[in-house]
Length: 358
Length: 199
Image: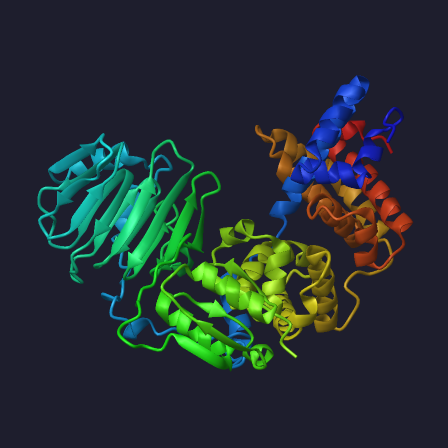
């Protein structure tokens, strides 16, 4: 493209130029144009300013429509009344590892006080030590440091990490602070939820075990669940109270990654899911000529992981296989190869993609 | 539960494919992402929030019903904008935008502008955005739509033409006229870049 004769209006009429101005697309190309056409720099700058001003004005020109109510109305007409579209409910409540339902009742003042964007460890600790005496443990060694808390909970603090906790917990909650990495085994106590503040993330449990990795200088905050249920949220956003979408419930073999730059929370499966209910005694592990769904259900139960598939499509897929306590991913790979399907992970669930079997 | 930010952690094509298989979370993530965009575009046709709410509800109810066919949709944003426009025009049972360029309105406005200018000059801080907004609102509905599609939604000239149901050249002309009217309106208010926008 030759830009020698381009006027202000020509730039405004150029699709690619607008995409650059609005979404920074093909930035390298336009940076080069600026270099190649020095006498056009002023016009380009003006065109950019015009587009951005128009965009700002258009952004404000918008009606107030209630997003939540509209969504309620949509879901009533779609997903909440569509029996085929609903995936089978999980058996949360029957599993022995579920310690108790995590009730998210958060004292509002706590969040308002901590709502500043720079909610890193030291600031949180300074704030908390105004209310009670904190004990701080630091581990510089390779071997995890075992810390026993007064309520019977145990924390294994990993290398280059700090952990602060009150000498005596309050009557209502157990609040602790972490910078770095640690594994937690929390003594169940439904009346006193256990909180871990780690950078921007708050992890809340009633009794369970999990890992947290939150180093001040790292881009991500990671929470990985071994047993029980854990509730995780971003404490900067919690001010938007009563919005349930702001916190994530994690189940065993799931982890949440918080990206500190984009402030987004995403739920995933842990890399190597471990069997939550290993084989006991002579439980059935050999399957001969059964519909693949039978085997997938057995895997779901064993690893407590949700596997989604189209039952009708897979009805004709018959397989013979032996399950083991080996890697879930390896076993799933073998099954998929056998029936000519593929799988992928989405939102901490495994989705089987198949066009069916003849 | 998906939040507004979830959209960016996924590839959009994957989301539509998952929706095609009946994934409820993908449905909600797409809704949350497009809600604001659709409300913004819809505002160009309706000043009634309830009417717009109805149209968005109908639109997403239809999307869920036809999710399997939509899995391979190429330009989702363009598709949704067009679907909303159709939905609004269906719900109101008439043409959204009068085809005639309403030049009379604009002339009336030019007459009144000198009065307004005095108030404007008395203000110590000029809110540029508000003035540009006001200037845009004086344009004809079709000029406004063209500006909105191009400079807010980033639609190409081809896509804008298809959405508005007119040839590409007509969109260019609408924009051309819009620029000169904006220039006229804004000239008295602030004398920066806008004046350089030669007709």
